[in-house]
Length: 205
Image (tube, rainbow, N blue to C red; front, top):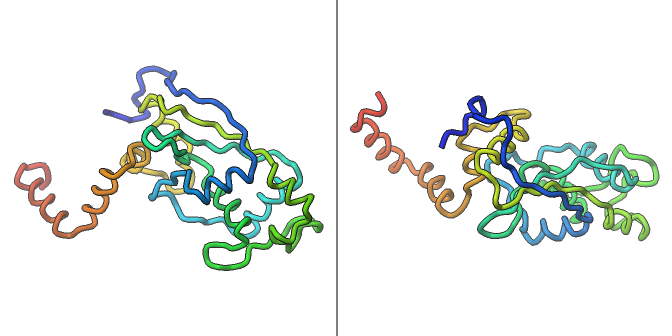
């Protein structure tokens, strides 16, 4: 199937979606329970302390934050994270009070009532405010049209280093078979065998 976004026959794409609001504590719980699928090719956690702190600060102040883009996975009923993994991981790390490198996650460069505080150091009222803060999610139905979904994923993931077409396909059609292909691609013997097969068939020079 050709997913070249420059050659879409119709300007309208069949992407079914709906909105849902989740409180922060529910999103954190689902992150801890691995209910979100974050494609393996996506970049690691890259937010600096100040960026992460400002996001938490916005929620504590009751300010709106950008929506998360999710897709319901057809096979597991989990959510594939299309856009928003940095925000989801920031929430998870703040509740854990630790960044992936082990550094204590205390708010930095925010307004005085919250500056230098960890989650457990927040007042009970502020913790409840954060727990109950709502983040809007745009959820793509499991009945999505593959070409439309591909186009959306490409649109949302072309900031910084763009994903190539195969990486986007891997995200949309993940699973044990895709994992096996990725594992085999790292095996020198399999790669050599595949290259020899292509040479024999005249597909590469």
